[in-house]
Length: 470
Image (tube, rainbow, N blue to C red; front, side, top):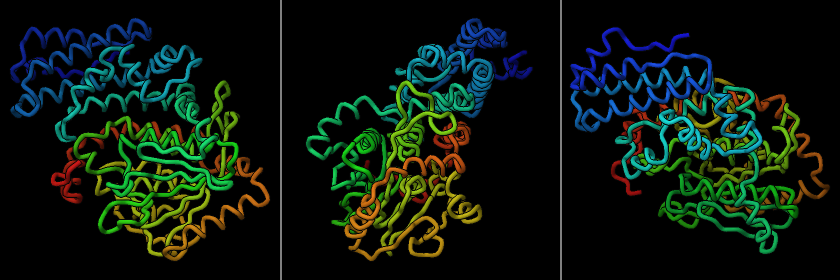
């Protein structure tokens, strides 16, 4: 099977763009062909990818290239990217097994992409490549992280490797386990971006990013996942309430806001790496939906692995935009204030709204889901459409009492069947393999969206991001 993708006029095209003829010839001759031996292919393909990188480095910096030079760089990148796809189709399981010692080690996704870059140089950006991107606006970033998306997509599309990765991301983080004793003693943990406290037989997990209306970014993600872990591991609580803390905005000062989704200002300024999306949805969001997996067991749901689960209640005050609206779709009960609203402004942001495309149609039907995701339809929580997502509506100022009453009702006779019922719903609605296959497509498509010129255009047009300070 040949990996040939270079056009017949490729060398001439690249030479006329100003690249040295000998370097172009060496690159063309190095084009790899699949031999179906992981060891041999890894060597030959890696050599070609590194030569591709060197060839691009001979061109002027991206912001100083003329039209022909830009076309040459694009052609080299696309050619290398096609060969990466070919390599991964044949060898992703072998590579994944090497990185996880045959599945005996669980490696989180943010660590996996770095380990893979070291194991197969040129397959995707390594630590140095990523470091050179730091400090650049999103519009000025090179897009090398797209190759992370292609790698993760291939891992998730492979049933064995994909299930194992999902299992790894559902395990409690070591730092969460380290904090559990402190939480059991003090009943509260406050971290950057999130907090968790025990209140009676419930844990309250709060989004905490007051300057940005509780929006999520790289600085909030670890704290939120740790708080989710701790709440699930806490033996003294039976229900978990998800809520937004008070914010600083003059318009909403002193008021709780559930959350404004991804931090668009940080996104515009290049402060949200691509792997953030996958870490979020395979991590804390999936833990809310599926619970914590157990080390040494098989993956959950149809694979039969055990889980640590509790009922999740979302308390929506103000609004739940983007990612915060996505989270409502994995909670068991949603209480919303009468004037609260929901939006999934993916069209205006230029990205895919997590797993909302998979989950929202179960709540609202396909038509309304498309209107919300593709056309930015706003859904009032108290409307008939909003009540498809929200279980109960309360007046402003009545949320505390409503949450207390619901938690009391849920825990008064025990919630021993809650985990079993949650699993039973999941196996009929979203078994692990369905989620895994969705996330494989999501990883690839979101990578291209994250580096699309349309994303920058949308942020400037709809968010005025260029005039906002991070």
